[in-house]
Image: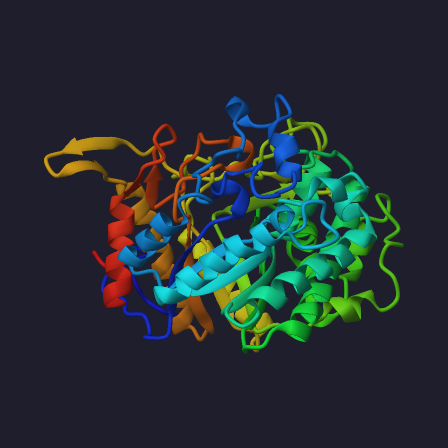
Length: 477
């Protein structure tokens, strides 16, 4: 066991020369230009324009206007010293209705992005799907429709044919847990449905889409990239005498229903049993798990907080502090009797507890279960109530809470490496403040502040801190 400060506030830790430092964003959250150059509508366009779905009625129509400010943002990444940039490609920019011929203007935008990164010695990490499904596909059932998985493979092939000589790492899906359970079960994310059976159907079709897309990419790329998927694996703490059963159930729905077919070629039998009153799983066809079980060269890990669970007694007021907006449905089909307990602070502006030990525990447990699969932290960061102050040298954001958060989580990652984990890099979420899904522009995750009136970018103190970490490869004080 690695020693260090119990609060994870270590300093002076050194990272290897090949450890990849970068930052991450997502297309709908930053691009804007929602109706330009042939882009079709996505489910998030529809969802955000539906009254009552997003705080303040915010939409991604303009967002950070990254689409028009690409060169400025690339130069900013270079100034900060980023070694990698994890971005997502908007499917409706490439295929406005999710099928058919490619939209040249959309491909050209991402080609400029990738070429701009390479010109600045920044490695492109491309995520094919970060939740902006073409609305036309949702009209046909979205991820509950098996055909969407095959449409996704065609889309992957189109992008791979265009960028497959330059992208460093291909990531198929970002957080399919959110796409399935928050999109089709709880109603918190687009398309905003409240149906547990549809959520579990979406789980499988997302898994299938991953496998089909990996195979399609391998057919057309000409360099030697990494292939990956990014999961928001849940760190689950059991509480009390019923905690073990509650944790087993939530681990099944949150983690093993993805890790099983992806890495072992099987769905967990206990998850199928737990959900038998919700669905019969007849959407899993012979040969599907073999398609899903594609070799990958990297598993992306997104981590923000932990959950604490026990079984609900059915009588006392039920606590549901699972970290997500309550929109009337459930993200836990078949396990609605699980209670998510309030956790001790401190908290971020999202109300999520800050627990860097969870990141260390997650990385170590993944390494122990899948020792041959390299890992990368593909998202980690925090939203805080940033304040702009006027200094003699100009405006500044002294985001000490975010620096402390990052310092403690980089310490956790370093400790995992010291315990033998093959951790290849760390992509801080997020490069810029942006559209935070159902929370609109009310939450700021960026290490760079965006003024939503002027769209001016302002690196926060956390960006300067991170830049020093990248330059020295040593955790700053």
